[in-house]
Length: 361
Ligand SMILES: Nc1ncnc2c1ncn2[C@@H]1O[C@H](COP(=O)(O)OP(=O)(O)OP(=O)(O)O)[C@@H](O)[C@H]1O
Image 1 (cartoon, rainbow, N blue to C red):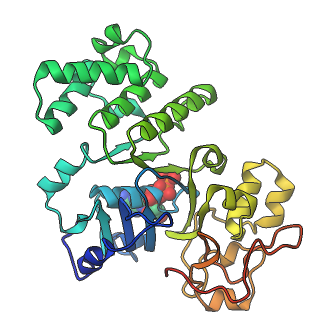
Image 2 (image 1 turned 135 degrees about the vertical axis):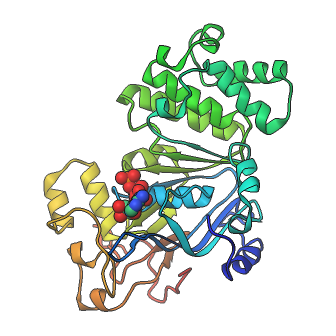
Image 3 (image 1 turned 30 degrees about the vertical axis):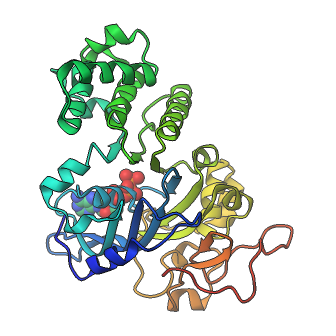
């Protein structure tokens, strides 16, 4: 991650911000820009002027299609952008600390102890030559400066907490001896053993079959709640967020286009892209067609002016390709980046006040 620029003053000021619930955020992202320079071409813009705040104990679902910038955002927060990725601007404040000003050693100490990340394909995360109990214990020893016996005890407790069958035997097992669901639980145990304040789950359960996925998600939620941690839950499956998250943020082409408390979001999604995602989730081709203008390529491509979603939007008007919409708060905690937000079928505006002011960007 690059060192602090002028934005780090924004990070310091950010400590004074509060979330919807009135508490200071555990994570605050302000105006974040991430790009990937590509040889002999324009850099790929992955995240663009993105704002996101997450309160302690809150689970926020980050939903968007492939290539919308979810992983780039997560990795930028952790200071783990994959080369040639770089942060071009903005601030990331975690627990009052300016993450962009932190040294690599400081970031290493924060990662694993205060912020942890769970990703899909757990086997790639695990060392094939070390027993799973030892791998969990090693993380605890490295971050908590405790002795071997205590670390082993913590590892065993974590194996029980993630509901691994026969934990004493699994403690001594090697990763190849575990099923995919078990390996995912071990990765969760590693992520949670130091009781991090913030967990990022990046599509972590997508490789599991549906029943195991539901069990693992429920477990993850319970453990995060028990530890009082906050979580950013990244997924392409908008349906999961309904049961799992306190708040939903929809990302399109590197921008948050809608964010709202979960109930408000599902009762009245206002951005045409969110409505399209919900229609796709409902597996209803007619609804999908109604809400989505197909393009030759599915990947969001950036527009020169106006709304990023305009080329694919069935409601787009001339203004949409001219003026970039700002995020506006149209119901309590419900912000939408759209000139023409969707009205509910019953003709209600979903609480859209005619004089709604602008919020955020
Ligand atoms: N290493 C890289 N080099 C060049 N471009 C990259 C690299 N990693 C990501 N990108 C580009 O950045 C944009 C955002 O990608 P990112 O992986 O963050 O999206 P995502 O929403 O996490 O996608 P997915 O759900 O498929 O993981 C995409 O256009 C992608 O092609």
